[in-house]
Image (cartoon, rainbow over all chains, first blue to last red; front, side, top):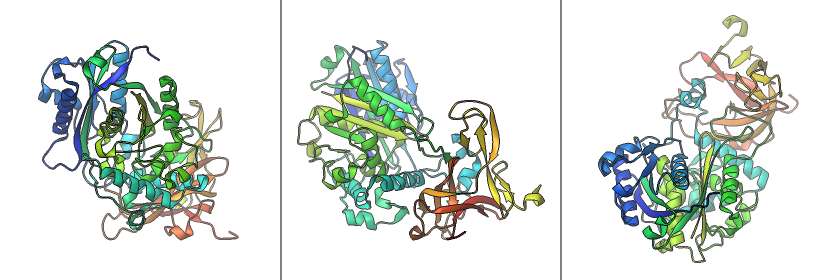
Length: 383
Length: 144
């Protein structure tokens, strides 16, 4: 752990959803400008930048919109962990003393419908996609199907996760899906991949998020309500973990990349999961939030059933999760998702989350993002 | 070659055996025994490059499952994308002592699928132009 503190001093977001006629790079530039304004600095004050998208162009191109300042800019493309990877890079540059003020940006713009990755780009034979096995939705359905059987999770709990997401999204002006839906409506929606119905899945979408980070004495200069990035940890899969796009999985089990990244993030921060006041977890579908709660160490495996049924993960509960509506209500622009989680936690820690501000004390936040083919990035933030 | 095994596999090096008794082509590590599917040139567990081809067992139990209820996008899917789409089952079948293999299932009715169901390897027509076959698992009837 480094002695040098890193703080998040600027937040910028372009609303999530569908924005016809607006390019991903335009969304990124808008988010970056808002983050710079929030920190009260100019683009020329930034001495390191990192960012990227999955399918909306390379982030460095936004420099031509923001201004050509010669800033070192690293383009990141790392699936769903794109934002987390950009943040990891900026955090390392700041703690190393290679930069004083950094900007990270994540954005994306996907066409409607499920993602259609090509097997050849994932080290798999063409047959895997041709025969109908290469779908992320199938994987998540099969992972939660097994998990429900092993740990006693009900379909009602899956529906409650989605109902909470849409209720929270209705309080978030930057969310895409802002209409609350009941548990019954969610269960009765079209079956996509059993046990998961249509409204238990997020949709690929559009949006952008930018954050300004600073180190040491610059943090308090630039922020009235400093929030510190206590740790960021990033892991890939080990042999034995059950991951997306796997034609086979070994009989021996291993901890998931999320479990390892979360444990490392808490250890580096010197803060435990029991101290977390608000969490943002990858919820590309309802089951993911259920499983990631336990993989992150925020509860025991199987405990989710009572936690979620009792309302503990709602904004008013003792462990609010995905207070901005998560991927379910915001949609998933891959490059922006991980940074959206951090954006929301910083707002909560500042006490600036408006209608969706958690009522209790808010001193420690946690974020977790997961992506293909088995990567996870976690952060611990605190005031 | 084609006559010997009586079917055209969807990809070379993936399925061996005959139409009546197909077998998946995997690999086993000489050093640590880890079994993979499809076959790999090195072991994902111990990194050894001493890996041999191995025909996997044909029977196992359903470890988890789902049903694909909407047509996957083409590409990469080669099956019927529109109104002719028929939902299909997908699962991981645990082959005892070897590995869990992801596969299409011949059964797509959720009421007839459950974790622990005994399954056996079979062939189904691969999605796309007629001719090629791909692997799938079918539920074993009682006493089979």
